[in-house]
Each structure stands twice: as C-alpha cells, then as structure tokens.
Image (cartoon, rainbow, N blue to C red; front, side, top):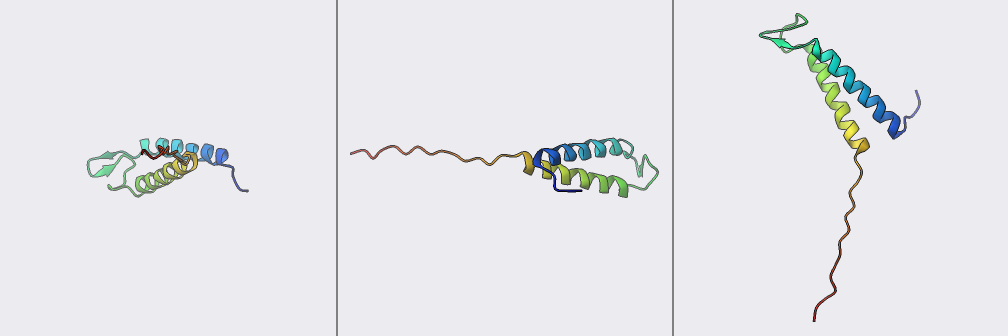
Length: 78
C-alpha cells in the first residue's frame, strides 16, 4: 500500500469509523456481561472503541484547516 492523499485517508478513516460502529452494535453491556458473552469490560469493545477514537482524532487533524487570522491595526491617533 502506498501513501494516501488527504482525501483518500479521510475516506479510509470514515470507513474505519463506520465499521467500528457496526462492530460495537454487537458489543453492548447487559449487566456484568457483554452481549457477545464476555465479561464487561469486553476486550473487543475496548479495542474497537480505541481504534474508533484514533480514526476520529486522525480525521479531525486531516480535515481541519489551519486558521490564520488577520489583524487590523488602526493608525495611531494624535
């Protein structure tokens, strides 16, 4: 796999986030047990939640544009 452009990475990250959301629907806590049968906290749910957060953060850094402000300075008054 080569280097991805910003647009390609954004599409990839969005896909990873959607996939994580689908996986997490099968891992909801029901008392002391996850719906998959593991004891809460479910290791799968934790790993997928962390991966989802990683791609949300990376996507935010990719699509965020730097803000450069303009400052208008009034001429000195006499």
